[in-house]
Image (tube, rainbow, N blue to C red):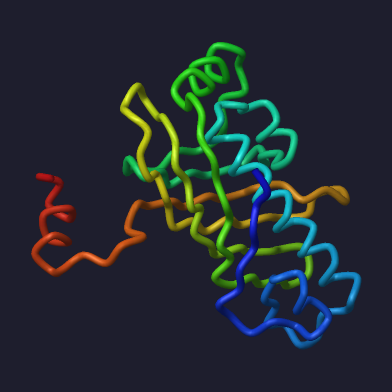
Length: 175
């Protein structure tokens, strides 16, 4: 399935056709092209992940040694377990689906880049029947030795708005 990139932010004129919003007026065309390529990699990585193709995901988005994850299941984790057992378990958990990356905004400052997006996903996860698994995500990248590495991922399932009472239940941890 082909990924689509949508921009809800202000787009740099050189990227109107590419769908990537850039807000740093000091960026060059090369910076814009590099950020657009990073967004395309993130879109391809989201599609690979929901299919359970974790090794392709990691090839597209290498993780920094100091990577942090704030997953939709809660909590915060430091580092990424690259062991075969961990990768195989992750691949088995995500059993197939499709994903599209809806870009809300992108930012770039030197060797840091941020993509705020919605991963519009539908698939089979954790043995549950196929369903919508869309997530709001913030991806933070740092360029190390010329390569963009994922240093932080925050994801949550609050794609649809909730009311104050629902938020209070989540905040209490009693949902």
